[in-house]
Length: 88
Image (cartoon, rainbow, N blue to C red; front, side, top):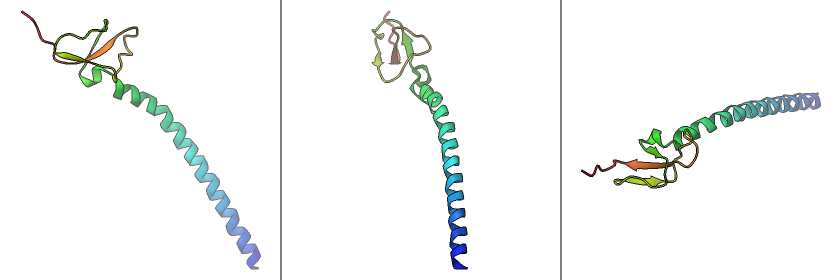
């Protein structure tokens, strides 16, 4: 009698493990699809208050930030953070 009881509990443990594995795979697929969008938002130059310039030189008063990207413009744009000084 105890042998059947032990087999029954093993069956439910296997079922629970399979369900947990399926849930983990679904969550993994959901979050990996969203992280790409999140990463673009975090690394965007203009989201950080920067300005994208087409040449590789930033105006006076700003500094070139290679960490942030200017993907929306494409090409050879650089991210410049800070307040540009106006020479009069």
